[in-house]
Structure formats: structure tokens, C-alpha cells
Length: 198
Image (cartoon, rainbow, N blue to C red; front, side):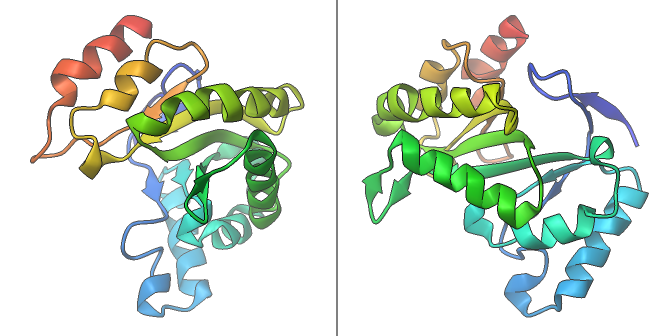
């Protein structure tokens, strides 16, 4: 397995990570038993994967927590995410901290390596930056998250307008965005900025 640096974090991560969402949700969506999902995560680790990405909305944090429980904490990099809305309304700083705390309980961890604000559209960016980020930076000072990240709403922001704003800020250490055969706009709008900023 090859390894690389994750964004501005300095974390050494496998170039192939294991996403614990998608349509499969580690097999959970197809009714696979939890033991199969745990075995999948542990086998990925045996093969050199050390980066595991989940989210509160995926319903797989408890599985990830159980799977990595026997492993040394410094051998894995855990990334999770909080949604930014509840019942259609943007959440407050206090509510995003509650989401972080709930994720830590489900993962059975005292901290996560990367905590993302998930699916931020351009129209919500200012609220996220001004309301949620300060609350999470206070939690970072307490050691509950090591690095702060943001993810976009790929299908609805194919020009990466939210990330154009986010990449002007120093608070984000990791950005997650859509880049695939049908959408390579990041070559012009995201990659140059991320390379300039390190």
C-alpha cells in the first residue's frame, strides 16, 4: 500500500481509504450481518488501509467503532461528518457539538482525526463558517477532533462555488469534493488552490 499526506493535516493515510457510506453502507443496506461489515473493515486494515471515512448520516459509525476497537488508535485515521441541518433548518454551534459528541459515543473514541461539516451548499456557507466553525474549533482545543474539514454537495454544486469560499479560509484542513469522469471541474477551480495552500 502507498501512503500520502491528507490535506494540511500531516496525517499519513493510505491512498486507498475505505468509505463506509455509499449505497452499500458496508453491506448494511443489503441486509448483511454486522459481523461481515466488521470483517471487511479489519481485512482492509490488514491489506494496508488505514483511512476510514464515515458519517452520522451513514449509520455505520457504531460498526466502524467496533471494528477498530482492538486496533491501536494511532494505526487508524478516522474521519466522520455531521450534517448541517435538522428538520430542514441550519443547526447551531451547540447542535454541531452535540453531533460531534454523539459520533464519538458511536465510534467509542475520545477524538476523531477529521471531523467534516457535510454537504455544505454555497448558500449555507456563511452560517457554517460563522456559527458552527467557532464551536468546533473550541472542541478542537479540547482534543475532541484533530482536524476540521468540509464537504460539498457535488451534484448541486458542480462548479465548486462553496469550496471557492472555503479555500480562502484557514480553518479548513481537509476538503472533500466531487471529482470523477463526469465532473472534472476541480482541475480548474479546486486543485490549483489546494496546491497553492499546501
